[in-house]
Image (cartoon, rainbow, N blue to C red; front, side, top):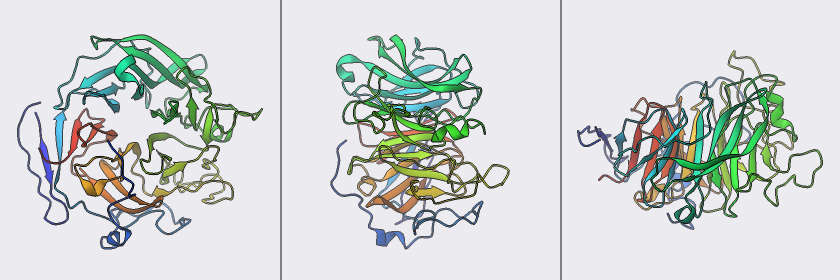
Length: 416
């Protein structure tokens, strides 16, 4: 089954048509939508915040809304995935997708799914765990190497691990799979694994970890001798990458890139500036969008725009503190931001270099218009689908592709 939702933008009323069918370059301009245009629409968030916390600067939250004027559609390509978590593009236009239970699938551009790919290390798929983020080697066309993160059961509890292996020529198995990094210490928790993974321009791996959610593990986000609550940069063999900010600091792990994170589930490189951007989950309020700079402390749990799920204040209830980085943007109430990607395609010109966020509890895809490292406009796409959007990527055709917890694969782009 294939359902198409045609979205015609601000120039016309929203039209949703459901039909029955079969089951990247860069730009030197930061954004095509000027900041002045964003003031014409009210913010997309209309619910009351969970706190009366004041933002550090104007536009840090609840920015004015924007609407896509170019016709586009959201098309369901498949509903046959089993709890998908990560999606990445393959050189031939297909997609490699992870499923939480511990298998991968390949999806064609029309949504046809392969049989499950096996041969991966055993995962602990309880709670938020399982087979998580996935990326391919920059030289995949020649070496067929795949890299992924997963939750691994070890002595003392569970942890986030990074593994690699070769996608077999018959695409039925991963060959010679091996774990190359374990984010220690382990904790008896099935929450906050982080798990996004990508390659930087130098060919090193960047991935994220969570602080495992427990009150006793939460402070680990501030410890430089811990891998929890961090963005980490390693080589393809799992060693600390050269040039990391703490490589010569005796009391710090040399693989750490940034710290003070709660649960990072979105990583993407800005195609204009080359900066690393991330999204991370807040508790009750306080979801964050950050620009990650090496060595910076992003504050959790010392500062936050969120509250405990009970409604109580977190720590000393501080939102700004000298030496701790402010988010570029934050959400209250939360949208639960998961995978992210910058749009570099040509199908929808006004989306150029915009950041797209797959939203879980918000059940939509968020479009953020970025100018000079600030969010100047926000739009919600596919908000009528009642789907928990888990990850999003750009295809070789210049459309966006997203997976949902409920097992769907969507194509979002120019009507076909």
